[in-house]
Length: 41
Image 1 (tube, rainbow, N blue to C red):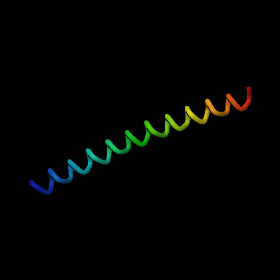
Image 2: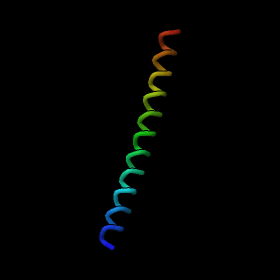
Image 3: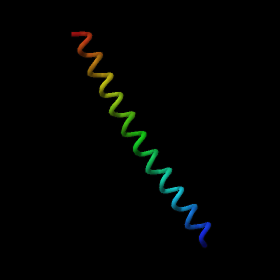
């Protein structure tokens, strides 16, 4: 039972990290887009 709980916690942590990484990647993409727009202007 303890092992199962540990596994669930690890899975939740991994999912949370994946979500945060995706969010950061989105922000990076937006920033790059803005920078490209400024260079083009």
